[in-house]
Length: 440
Ligand SMILES: Nc1ncnc2c1ncn2[C@@H]1O[C@H](COP(=O)(O)OP(=O)(O)O)[C@@H](O)[C@H]1O
Ligand SMILES: [Mg+2]
Image 1 (cartoon, rainbow, N blue to C red):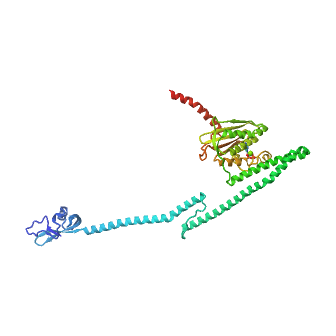
Image 2: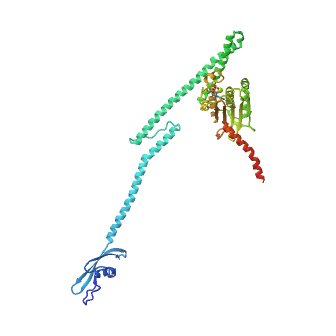
Image 3: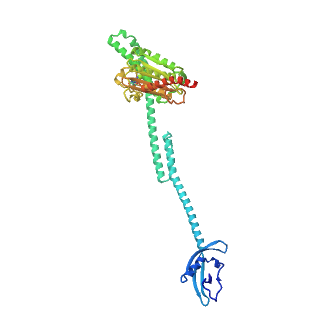
């Protein structure tokens, strides 16, 4: 509290300034004093800054008023209320809020973490298990503990996997039984067929002694026994593929020689049908790691087909080689293939014209076996055809096992052939200008 004489009190009697604390008169702002002098009938209030006993600045409220002392006259009285306690309270409240906020953030983080672990982790594990299942590991199962939704999901998932596994096993067993059956039947038929073959040959040889109708039957018997034998051989081969028992007998081979042998083996048939076989070989060697026996069989199949469906027109055999692959294509100008048939020709027993095909040559398994042979080499066997224009069958094989083919060195369709020819012509032309450019 400060009691001091008003500025305009100039009377003779005076009371000395009274101070009730260490806060002195200089702390009272001049503005406040002026305000009291101007309006003595009202109290004036102002916020000031004083220094506390420790010398720290503290906000305070100062209230001033005019008082009239008997004898001494007009005086001013000031009350100063330091706000240090209120400030402390504010600080405590602020700190509490800050700590509370941090605690809340941590709590929310912890809850999020726990929820993630509870929900997302099982979902991730389920995805992993599903992935493994689809990659063929049929024994993979999810962990399913407890009674919550995730556990229910796990149980349903495992039930689904169980049922899938059971069905796949059944199908596998069934297909194994079927494979065995085909293989056993083919083997069992071999012995009686050998006897029939011997007897048939005997009858065929002495057909001159029979009357003409019996002789004709003897000839029919002979050709049918031939077909029967090749069908049986093909069936045995197919069942070997199905059982996964087919293995490659690889050796580095020049495809030119393999092709030559295949052409020689069908030369008689080609002459019979009047088809000319034209070979366009590679300039250099065409060596690859292949099973020559299987590749020769593929080529023989392609050539026989081209001759049989080629309507006596020339058949072109082309060889090609690039960095990773070797290829042979067999192109005829015969009946060709209708749209969609290029994908069907490799299907077992599929024939474009069943009635005609049963009387001529093959068993309907030739291209299926060839396709399996190509796949065993990790190679490609592809077909193109257009009705009335002809067909082209292209075999592409990797030069080294394990090195995949990126593209075939030979064209398959006439369009590809045209663009390949154009490129080759451009390549022939380029070196001349390139060397000319280098010299200048
Ligand atoms: N070069 C070709 N031109 C036209 N069609 C063909 C040609 N090669 C195969 N095909 C068709 O594909 C079918 C299946 O051929 P393939 O598996 O060799 O059996 P097959 O020769 O015993 O009939 C043939 O019946 C024929 O319809
Ligand atoms: Mg055939």
